[in-house]
Amino acid sequence: MTSTPRSRHTARLRARRRRAQARARWLALTVVLAALTTVTLLLTAFDGTSRGRVATGPLASPPVVSLLPDPQVLATVGNVRIQSPIAQGAVTGIGFHGSSEGLALQPVGPQANEGLLARLWRRITGSTKTGLPWYRLESGTLRALDVGAPPGADVYSPVDGTVVAIRDHILAGRTVGAEIELRPTTAPSLVVTLANVRADRNLTVGANVAAGSSKLGRVVHIAALEEQALARYVPGDGNNVSIQVFPSATLLVP
Image (tube, rainbow, N blue to C red):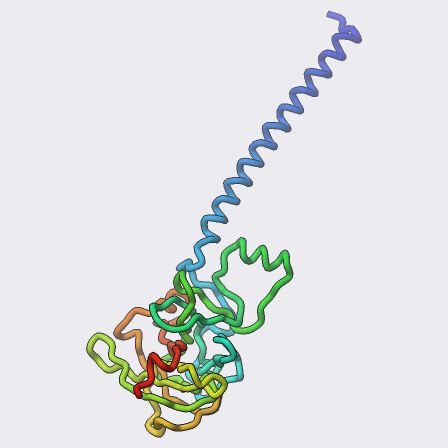
């Protein structure tokens, strides 16, 4: 059968419709796959306390050292700047978590386990933070700072101030190191407490201490008696020095 110009034109129209329909199907499939991928990413991104470990480069597998820590500020409370009590070469990781007591802490460095949307927003706005990365160990207001370090690592004062108390730290009916309370020079109405520390025998109440240079003691093996949340993200058992800040009236005995 001989084709006519009209039949050839009709055939071309049908071929165009088939190609358009095929492109539409591929486009719909692509949109569905992209939507599923986005939903999956969002479901995992909003979990700021993911149990997966995040590599942080220089914080992995440090040796036990007795060097003085660099003046690295980890958190602030008002005009109080809390420096790292551990030399950077011995820090295994940094975590912040909630507590039923204490003042809210403001982390200084970037959050290592931040959600996807927050990371995208920072990239879009160009806002970045410098300093050591930290992990959110649980939801809620951040009132406690855990500076991970291996047992035996030297612990130095995180603030300039005065030692106002040294008491046994009791856990599961056992004495595990000490709790050391410091009154910061810049905020005498506050008390900075450190736990999970074996106090230095030369440390006394009333002694003046300087941030980063006054030795308070050594890290104890707290993980032997209590599982540490920081262990989900760092090498070892998550042993750490725990730091909190309180109004002094709630801790000091008249």
